[in-house]
Length: 180
Length: 82
Image 1 (cartoon, chains in turn red, orange):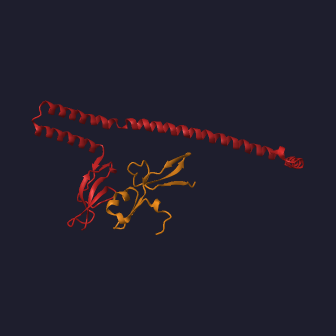
Image 2 (cartoon, helix red, strand yellow; image 1 turned 90 degrees about the vertical axis):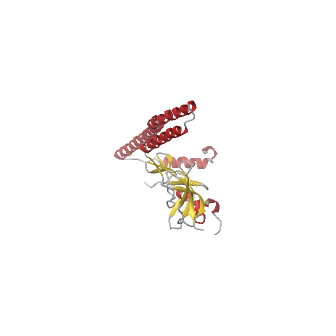
Image 3 (cartoon, chains in turn brown, orange; image 1 turned 90 degrees about the horizontal axis):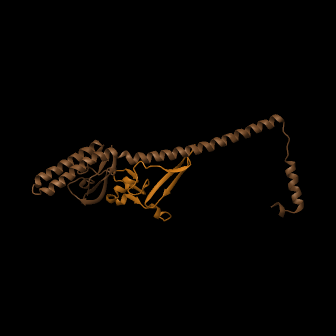
């Protein structure tokens, strides 16, 4: 840039740079130097802290991933019992396939067991049929005219909804009434 | 310190985020995230007949029975006259 400047301007710029030299008392100089040193120290600290924070965040992310991978272990162990029972039931049905009532009873027991197990994990079915439609728990898929039911009553449950530890994990898919 | 909030106002889903430790983090919706939209929530607002104001997931769930009181895909209507 300076090369392209006319000579007189160049001289002027140099003159200004020279004019910027100022004199300080020693105490003032030391104070400024001290402040500059402190600023550098803070900057250094900031960079370290930021790097530290980033490392911590990455480690936590990894820990969370590992945790999620094995958090289901307890649940899966319990599910293995259900798997065993179902395998046994299928084997039974294959070997002597005439006793349907006994087979049905067995499957019902497995179902009850699975249900109890999930209940112990904090699962609760959402009550829908006959209730007033609540968008926090239910999802309206259809509406049907019904002169007997009050407006916006759930008249049919198309898919069951569930709460896990009182949080909705799946809404109940429902059919809702409408005054004709 | 005041924080800046970034809003992704989408036609179907919306999300809002703040910077946390140099990274954007999506603020989870109190009403819950939408179905298959990650941490975003549906761009729905509803006014029910009994006077409730609903946003996000609950508003979407009742859209089928309250079409006249539910607003969706409002982004498409931006700039149009009413």
